[in-house]
Figure 1 (cartoon, helix red, strand yellow):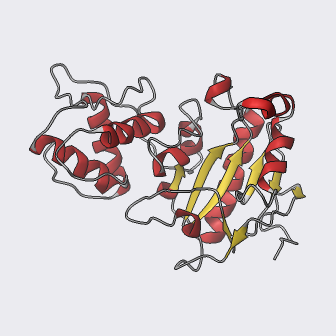
Figure 2: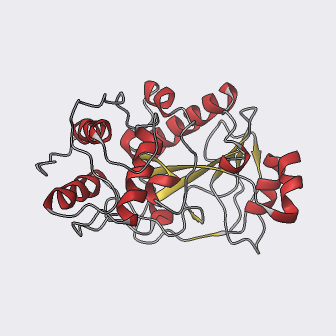
Length: 270
């Protein structure tokens, strides 16, 4: 079942991908997941560097790739649709958020053409950002998706994915009602700091706060590699001034502010 009609009036072109299936346990998407296309290493790299948008499209419609997304947004703001929003595109992989583990079934995937971290994470052009905002707002209005359900691939797959990265302008999206945002909190003097290797009830409470917000983290009471990856993912999206996997006072205060902004009550005691 290849797409024949765009879901969004902003779509400039259809480029049907065969890589999709039925949504499972979810009648309609309630999340938008933002990615960057990146660029592979090895023999294909030169071609991707020369034409990142064209190479990304070719990959996302290749049956052998077994990956896809609903939309691709080019650097000039041109929007291409590959998969109907009614269908389950294959873009999230192994992922989780707020207890859901089949993120492909509950989400719309948007690939943003950008060469990614291995190429120095180029800035996202204003026309591209404007197109992403407009596309998200259209999907949110049509599907009834809440702003806080617009997330990064790195949020649902900490330690495995880092896109769309710390240079993606989440604050600009939030000003237009897309995504959850709060100003980065300043670190308090002598504030608590948690880092890899720490153990005990305070670490368990820290993990509980991240889990309450949405991250898939186990409450072990040990600040392990999994917990560090979650902290890094949070920082990459919401505390971008330093991404080090250390839960310092600024990170904790920003997390508390976001939990409050999201409407989730907490009493974790961190």
